[in-house]
Amino acid sequence: MTDALVESVRAAVAAVTDPELRRPLGELDMLRDIDVVDGTAHVGIALTIVGCPAADRIERDVRAAAAGVDGIGDVEVAVGVMSPDERRALTDKLRGGRAKRQMPFGPDSLTRVIAVTSGKGGVGKSTLTANLAVSLAARGLRVGLVDADVHGFSIPGLLGLVDDDGLPPAPTRLDDLILPPVAYGVKVISIGMFLRRPGEEAAGAVAWRGPMLHRTVQQFLTDVYFGDLDVLLLDMPPGTGDIAISVGQLLPHADVLVVTTPQPAAADVAVRSGVVARQTGQRIVGVIENMAAMTLPDGTTLDLFGAGGGEVVARALSTEVDVPLLASVPLSGALRSGGDDGRPVVLSHPDDPAARAIDAAAAALAMRPRTLAGRPLPLRLG
Image (cartoon, rainbow, N blue to C red; front, side, top):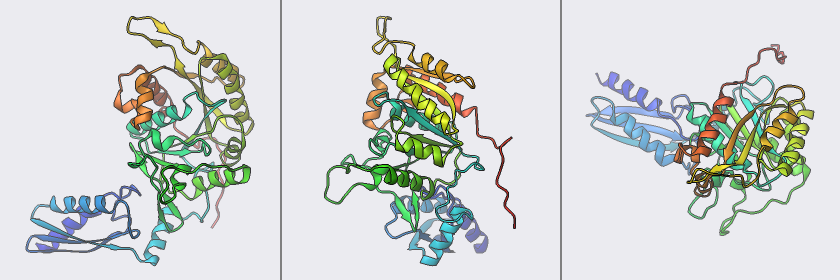
């Protein structure tokens, strides 16, 4: 009877998910001795590192899982830390046999990579990217988000990944792997998470040129453990500079989503960003028009930035294949305030017109999963 109870406790605890790695503790080899004495479950677990930021949550979830087993009246949890050899074995398992510094999002990956770009700044590209990521995750997809706008990073704040000082948290490091923080079901990485210095009240600025920018994006794609993803979104910097070129080289198979406003000046520049992406071999999958006309309380509309820019961009980019206008997102106070508060409008105000438009775009993107059909795959022998 006691042996059966021990196995029931072990099974319950093994199913607890590590909140950073998003995999069960049993699969991660984090369980240690488990015993039951006089109705009390004694559970041993080993965290990945000393000072693991998820330690309290893991211990709480383990305690709750063990206490939920019939016949258990009390739970005692002993928390330890993996040895260096155990940690190395875990990182090898997480890599799935890939060598260090090998990017998991190559042409043979089933993860769909979508680079969200714009011709100029100030069109709301990052806000839309953050909300699209959250909307896709709410549909049950496994989503990652890379803040590739190194000079103007804003994704952590838009997703509420900031502490009481308004600064992004530092990611957990597991040997040479970086574990991305998770917000609203989305795994997120940003250069802003690496710039905070002790005693400073603001994240540092980045004044880097080509080689450093390329290396940063490359490390985000190789050293960050995203696990198995359905979609990886990249919030690109505006324009067609170094990072756009680097992403084109590193991810030539990526899809591209172009963001513009109705204003003709923004539309003209947005077309250029799409053309450059296509020159690197990437595929343009759609256009989103932001800051479109909003309906006022009296029923009239306000075209603050004009009209038609999204359709202009979609038509201009439809030279080889049809590029659809996925959504026209109206001006929205809720969208703006949600970005300031770190609460995406698609969750905080799902009935807002802007939220509905973004959800429609996410639905269109979710309907076109990545497939390897017709793609040449690398042949591995041995």
